[in-house]
Image (cartoon, rainbow, N blue to C red):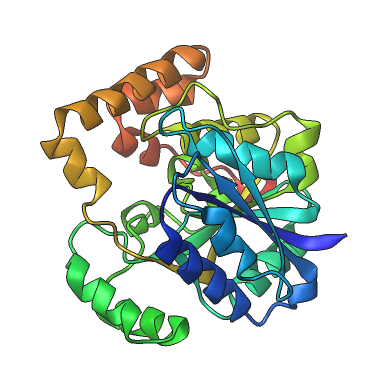
Length: 293
């Protein structure tokens, strides 16, 4: 049995897929303990050919689903179903792991147990850093060096504003607010035995990762922040946050997802608080006692 199944949803982005896989191959984690599943959301570009470039170097498989719009959640479900690893590590295409990232995911899983959800750290997804400056850093440095430079320049994880209430995520009442699909891991059997999947409703950007996180919490997940499980997100042409402000259709899709999430979890007081009063209200809640996690 493999230790880690790395699930990468892809759509017509061969350069970024190579970035992600190359960084995995540069990891200090034994490659014989890893499998990579390329979960193709209906690409018209031959992403299988890109995956095949790595055959013989690492255990890698390509799965494809018909293009019916933005469905990375359902693509990840293909990976969960096919996974042969003890832990599923979800990386968005274009996420570059540092050399010790995979080892830290495995260490934290072994330390905290079979219900552990590990939130990996991501550099460069904050709302203020210059996108081209970040691309230049990534393009001209190895992952560990790039992460160090970005840390020094304050290009930190965009969730640092949330972590101000404490790094002990398992003491938060609603830790799923920081589950972003960019970079996190969950034990495979924990998801399967509890029928935790990405919801097929979500076919526009937003909320499908939080929904998965709520499901995991419902089944007793222990959330852990992996600050040393460091990775870097290669910046998109536009930030999703900026698109929310400037693209009405993009924002409408996000709002539709929010309304669905609110209806789906109508009996969950924490979800309702988050939907009606926002993240500040969630973060104002008292931490759980240490003995309650």
